Image (cartoon, rainbow, N blue to C red):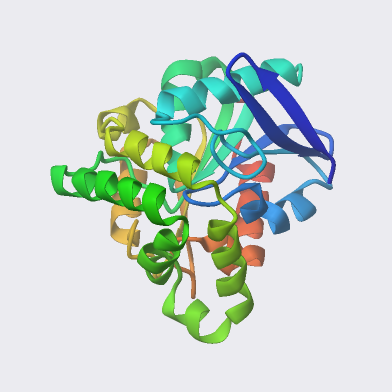
Length: 270
């Protein structure tokens, strides 16, 4: 799919844009890139305009040193929509870190949203110990490279079923992580360590919302995702068998079907 290079004042964003129809923006998690959503883009691009940015610091986008915050990513998405001349409300889907960006986008750019799809994510901020661990990992990544994230994160990102029976998925995710810029990964970790607590925002979310969670997700467990769904009036939740924290990659057909059903039937007049 053709890549568009969007030049913003302080970053070049790589954006993959295909299809026609209602705009659907797919935001990857950490430490991934737009290829996380390859299968969803191929299927949904037949009926929707599917836009997959590499967030600053990832994939083919340029890197901002030191620290990048969820506010910055959310504003990048708004600037991206302006550059693409998209003036109609979008559906915004985000996995994990992409979900944090989606919460922030709702908070600061509500008028641009028709709906939210929140995959394997959480609303809470880091605990002090989790934030400290992120900062320590950031320093290690800058010293030792992306392999640190493969060693520390990969076993927790994927379901046991995936690790045992889908070596192709394991390798694809491993290569995605290794191809990342350690400076961008470290800057992201520092920003994630100080992200706000979005839990009070949940009850204010007034657009159609779909939650998707892997039943074997140990980072954003189904119980936590169910609790978030209960806070958002009218939201839906779909649980994906044999998937962990990276459900679009581990169970692409099931995740695509859930998204398709929501896009077809769940948006109402938003």
